[in-house]
Length: 261
Image 1: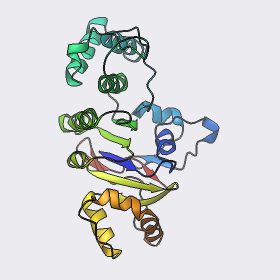
Image 2: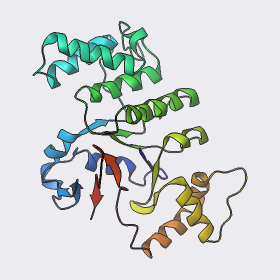
Image 3: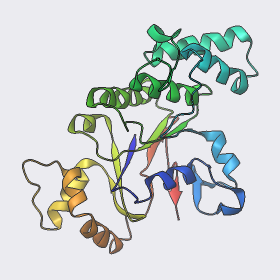
Image 4: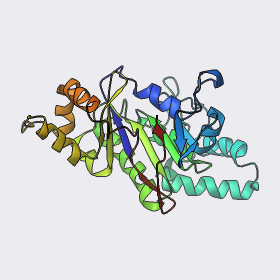
């Protein structure tokens, strides 16, 4: 599970849209993204492999949670019988912890419905219907209280622990300390450039090598935001840290899931 971190306006959402294939065909560079060492030729090919959860949901407020997932299943699981589609949705409701609100309206500002954390889980469920190997999320904890945000991160972590065939990439503005144990890698962006790519431990080592000491009241990621220009400058001098993503386990083999030239 990879978290893309960086100040506002640094390019996190843009990067996710490119990786997920949410760009026009004429704006796509077929030599910029590789999947399992093979070049991706078009954004349509990327959309086949990637589920994408936008920061703002577009759920229909007067549908129930189960109706929302069933509606999506009818489009993406046409090869399955109606009974099998319903079984898939019921299984997903259990997995997402939404079975208790399955028959509750999604709602919006004008219509009372489920909570913000539940809405986010429904949005995730919509993209998990066809079980994509790569799930991308833009600020999945935005607008949520600390407890709901942690619950979303735990849910994403559980998706990996139950199946080692899934890669999850998400942007987050400032993860709390309790989230760190669920996130394996961090990619820090600064003005669209790579400032760090690796584990939290490797970030702490880099900060130490730069001659800084992390204050007691801050964690390594918070302090990295304060010296991000130093990290970026140092990274330009280190050509060995060029992959956009680390090697991740996929289908019991090690691959470069996505790499930028």
